Length: 247
Image (cartoon, rainbow, N blue to C red; front, side):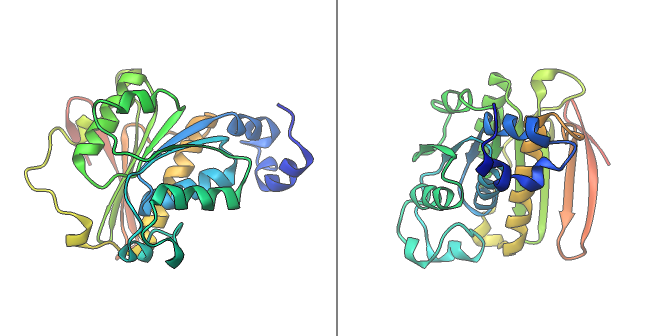
């Protein structure tokens, strides 16, 4: 596709990157991404995907904006309190980049509807906050052969990886990282989250999704990126197929 003059101005900083250029930007504009959850991770991921010109963005979110969200969910403001997050998020995207096509799913994702949602998009970003949803999303992405960019945060700690098990070994699945549902799951309301960490990881999800869409750089498939916000230290853990982890 031919970029318009306005698109050349909007995406000018992408066009000078050798890894992107006009051809890469055109590819982004014709690509699609599904974001599960429009909370702390999703707020940043959706914003950066829209700003980058990923042409079609799906958002799956059933919750409403609460005052406690505003500490880290930067798409929302006081005037959004009580609104469906998905409606407020759509407003922000339209204000940021009105050329983006939005597909809204104002519902919970579960085993009965996940594959139907996932199959419509080129890449999926999981910003959910519970393991039940993460398993459903991961299994659906594996079945539909879609790259999954998965992130999780708690307190000052975060982790990020990409899963493409449909490519076979050495590409692990999410279940190679988390074999089964934890016996005890602690919510962010109980453990807390430092706000900027959510924006940091959501932005990194958007970056990894763009790398997958463009076919550039080194994929995080098979590698778990872990970050400690208090020390500023990061490390990579290699994920091995068959539920084995090697530091």
